Length: 123
Image 1 (tube, rainbow, N blue to C red):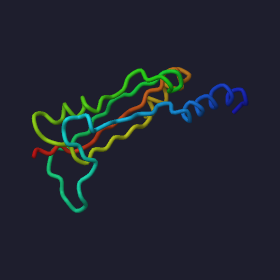
Image 2: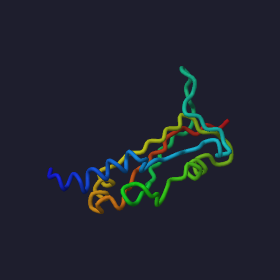
Image 3: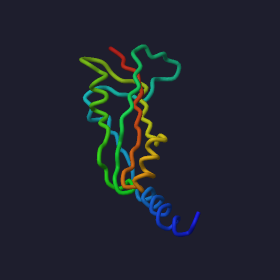
């Protein structure tokens, strides 16, 4: 790599990441339903498993959020009338297509894929 490429592209991307770019916060206390990250050890969870992918988009090297996935909307669509979510897992990653968009736009658009997984239990 040339020094000019490192100075103009790699360094700003790394700096944006260090300064908190692409940070996500999810708060389960405001959902209005019981949500747990795991069940007690040795217990079997009986319910309907779900896995939902959503896009999360940032602008300007990941410093300005353009769209955020809503944990409330995802879980509201899964819960229905009564129930709770157990074994909730939230995973954010950059897929190949996300990285391609980031490179092609020179970091102006930084998409991420967020996967929500869990089990809906009717109690």
